[in-house]
Length: 265
Image (tube, rainbow, N blue to C red; front, side, top):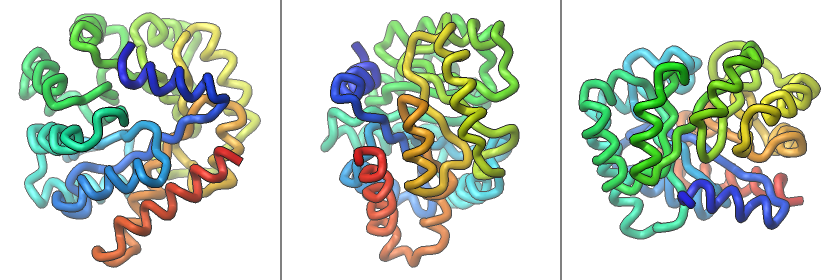
């Protein structure tokens, strides 16, 4: 059982919902990434999604695009992100880390070399936004052989056929994008999310996390009532943008603590 699978199983056994925050590696500064990861854990994160900076993050709205731009300006690339995970693992052997990003940096490194490097660094799963599940079986098989999970996105527009395809190779959890659009946009429709989750679970036998548009504790609690986990990204990046550097880590931890409390009460 992978770290992600063990984490999700433990949450289910306790009748708790997962909290999966996202930050972009290297934003606002590479030196803050490790303290931020540790603050997320202290605040109650179950799994950390760590964004790999990319120049054209097409699924991401302006907030996460700006985070990628800031990290790229600091020279942060895929190898640097793997080194950050390795450093995180030197003090934390339990919290799963999922890399979230795009195909280009992985293809540039080479899939097999990436998988080996990710495994050695202590990565637990990978979500590659532009790897279609229909073309991903070899990558997924190699990931699973190396003890890592493959996370896939599903959307309001996903057909039953696409959901079933994801169900064949997804492990760990699936990430349901609750909005038609990019990260951080629009208002959530809880009824629409609640209607979609059973459709997904017909074809997918892993937990379902829901993200895009979760901005506060009230919304997180509502989404958690119909899903297995909530994913929060843009709202955390905004916290970093709006807080002086010396207070950023504490501000993010405080925000995550508030979300954790809402999920548990």
